[in-house]
Length: 251
Image (cartoon, rainbow, N blue to C red; front, side):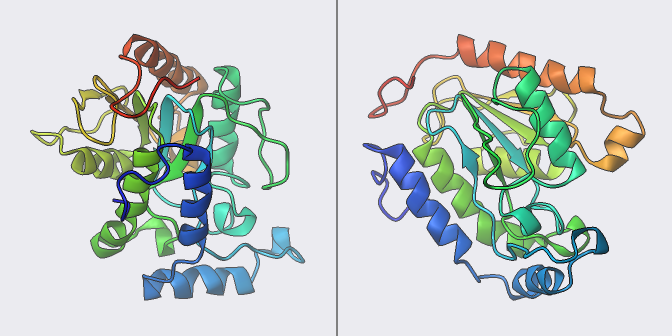
């Protein structure tokens, strides 16, 4: 949670910028710092000559978002390379195409921080902000990073739906929101989170398979199934009450 609970309420965009600066300077987890920097120092052959970001990756999107998409962590040669979450890898290709098809993005591709991508009504983030070895952060690393997600949700005052990509993100958000009993993850699972301080009254946690190559190559996740998640997110966002105490009505 933010040190000042009221921080950013008057200007969420400025609050998100300030939070991003703190995220990008974080060195709290020695194992993750060592890994992300080692990967950045030895680029994959396909990216030879590129300068990797090699730092934690902040969330990205519309400060008035009604829908927040939460992933596990940046990919070693995706967000850890480009500096934007879900940018520069195949999981990101799937995600941003889906957001574009469903009216949440102005373009279907994202290759760099300067590619002109703009999200409308959506914000994309992750539970852990550094690329972890084998995509497996420890519980301690998750717990060290979750306060950044809590702060983002504090600042994103119009959130109605949190789309969690994969079981790790789903359980992390459920735990953060204090959902009881702890819900089981499934593609399309819906959990009413209630009047939690970080979410709008009537907000919903919506589960989706992660658009990893393991899921997309095997057909576990299809484009139609992914589109159905964002169509449902839009439906739920439209149904939920507007705003929270002190938040006003988002655009």
